[in-house]
Amino acid sequence: MFKYIIIIFFNLSIVLSQNIDELFEDGNRFYNQNSYKEAVKNYEMILNYGYFSEDLFLNLGNAYFQESNFGQARWSYEMGLKLNPMNTDLQNNSNINKLYIEGFIDLPKNDLIDLTNIFFQSFSLNQFLLINSLLILLCALSFFVMRITQMKIHISFFYFSTIIMFFSVLVTFTKNIWDQNNIFGIIIENEVIVYSAPFSNQAIEQSVFYSGNKVKIHQKTNLWIEVSTFDGRKGWIRALDVRNLY
Image (cartoon, rainbow, N blue to C red; front, side, top):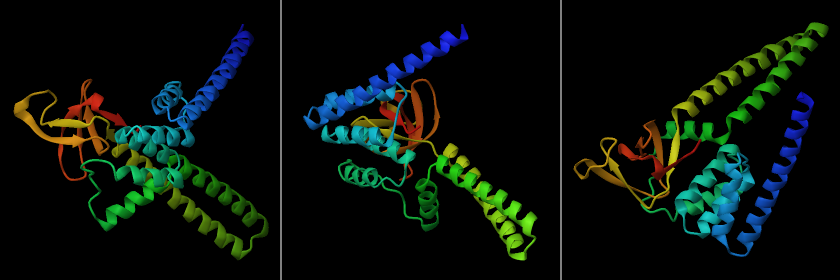
């Protein structure tokens, strides 16, 4: 029985993989034909299946950009950059897209905070974990060599690599905490009213956020999300007006 379940699951995986490839190819074809709405539909369907990649987010962002939907385009580019912060195509297209965002809110200038953000955003958590794995392997090999040769240079190298590995693990742990405490989203509606409480009332309107701007998410209910922006504004907006950078 278990054998048949595995066979069925394997066949379904093959069919789904072929379907994903077809959707991606159709999306690219629609994009090349300037049918950007159809391209977006295909790319979004792939995301709904739970599949994603740098290329998918890049193409989706480009399709949204051609539709002048700069909020969704920014979300797509930044999702791709979360997978690979060093992707130059995503970086360049994201920077161009920001020029079209109304009322763009830039990061406040603070050298220490800027350097910290740049460092933690330059690598994904998976890349940090990969570096840790390589350093652990290096430590194991250096320990093995040290035990065999007992040479001072090998002993020194072992202690040096151990210190570097410990520092790397500490940085990775900090990166994980940083990610958990810095949950962001992108405004995807043209104009979003910010309220001082999680309900709609003209008397508690505070300000307006524009599509494409990035907000930090603090807490949420079923219908509302409390957010803040880099210029210091804070309040509640409707959950459907923001797309999370998960």
